[in-house]
Length: 158
Image (tube, rainbow, N blue to C red; front, top):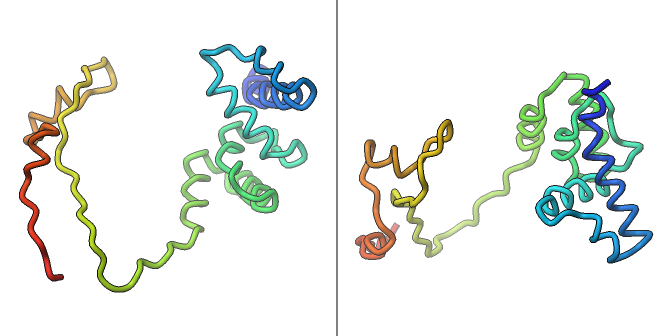
């Protein structure tokens, strides 16, 4: 029972916020705690995009979040497939991505410089998360932003 409640609370909050916005306009914003605003705005968006009739109790809120940008017909199809295949959220996301056609690259030449040097980071090592500052210098040289602006770039005819 608690697992079901845990998987539904995001929709409860989202539906409540959407109701409040429709019923009270701007006043509903007073119900949102400032520190939770971004999270609750996402709950409201998913609840607005995935109608109650399309929600699958057996799936998590995160499954519904993955299909929220899709049309209702696509949401229904993907959520049903996720149940049939017993997909995790990651598997559902991967299947949707794999099903999207890759647009063709433009033909001909175009002028682009793509640079991704090994940047220096100012982050600190956080237990269990790692950090670029602590690990990157052990594996490769990292450029400062000022040094990366003087990297040689040569013209190419190809």
